[in-house]
Image (tube, rainbow, N blue to C red; front, side, top):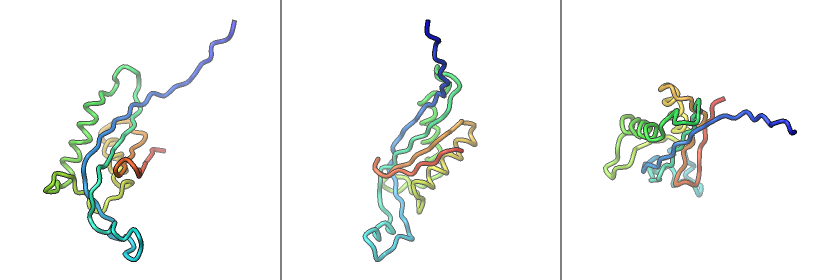
Length: 128
């Protein structure tokens, strides 16, 4: 009889949300094809957070985490007249870092946060 294979696993959950927002890169080289990034421009920012959980039966409820992330954005960011969030000169990486620290300070075992522009270009921050 074959010996059963023991596999060590780690259980993670991932929450995703998308929010409209604006940002700019003031230091963008003006004399280059990306000079336009110095001006405020709009994206749909796709946010995802991976959190380690202790077990597989709703150790963390997805809906509550998603609401907490959105609530944090509501309380910490100015809203543009059009309804989008004003992220100023924050890059995707900066926003991901800020969200990772916020969630860790709330007690979540966050392992990774990613923020993308229009689901194309993503800045990822990992713990460790």
